[in-house]
Image (cartoon, rainbow, N blue to C red; front, side, top):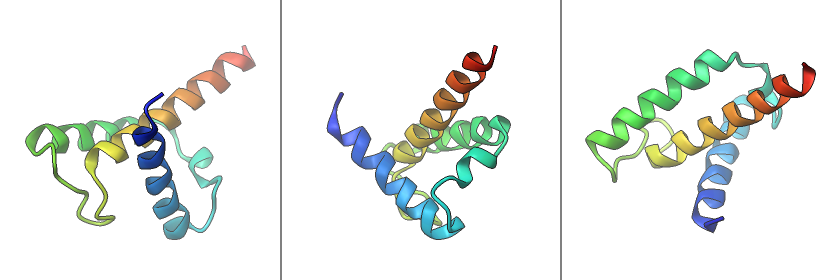
Length: 82
């Protein structure tokens, strides 16, 4: 696993933890919001591969990776419940 993706996701998580005040708050969000955010960051990345999110100042690609990581975990958890 390339380390850069781990560092990028960690930076987005640190930002989210500061903004929302909880390390586990992401588990309370419906998957559709992460799909929408992933798509929005992907489109922004396509428009400008070096672009950053206006609010966080972090690269769109890192936000995209974090959203995908959340969706992967949610998918895994829902599969385990079946």
